[in-house]
Length: 341
Image (tube, rainbow, N blue to C red; front, side, top):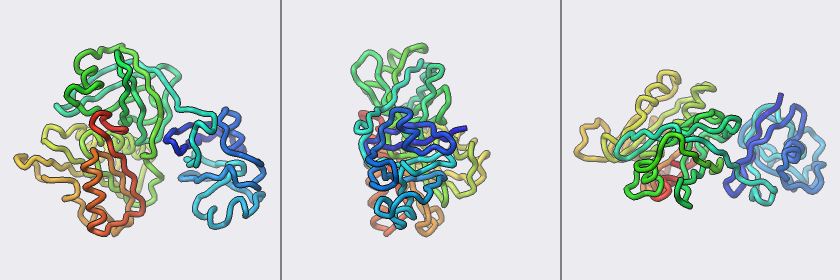
């Protein structure tokens, strides 16, 4: 038996390692050639300090307070040389991955299908090579090399971690490098290279109500998050507000309906900007964030969409004096369809 430990480095790279029962995170990392910061390995220097965002573990009592104070321990800080996990964990490592002699992973896959979902979005389905299922945290993204060019573009997974088939929602950009490839040259069987996972936008442990705000293809990471919540179960209220420009830009609504059937605590609302739309909810997502979904600030907010949407939500929170318990967001740029969408 072993536990999966996600090491999130400050340069956005995530590396997954296996940790045996009774093994410290530091020993597990070194065994797998990830050189986490360390000077003493005895709980004395504090060089290996990080922050455990989720998971269960035992720190023992053989470290000194100069290395890790009681206040730091109460805030989730850990010494990886003393930390013995008793579940899967996510740990923030406050150095770049390159300083730990590790690098972002790379896997190969075969293009299985390209499906136009609307004039605005395309679904890309990739069958990963056998034995190379890519581990990631729901919400994270990868770089995908564009065949026939030197470019890559970045997209969030819309699928579950660890599956042999990876899916992505891609914004259809006129004359876009990836959009052009998918619309004009892509064929089943094409080989694709994926580099990742990357990014600090991912689902944390759910301990309170969650509000998800998606704009356009920024829906992608939430599909991955919701799939994991369905798989693991969740008793907290989860509400998604999904905004698009036009009626026919609403995609994957059938998937959202399926999530709502399987996860009783999940609800969602769609919003359309176009004033000529007959949609029951028009405007922007900020127009439909009533007090009920904010839970008096006792809520974790996740936001993924184009920069104007992200900026509008930030201004709305500031103007209304809204301070959620935690707030995680990802902007995506038009030419990259996302750094995460």
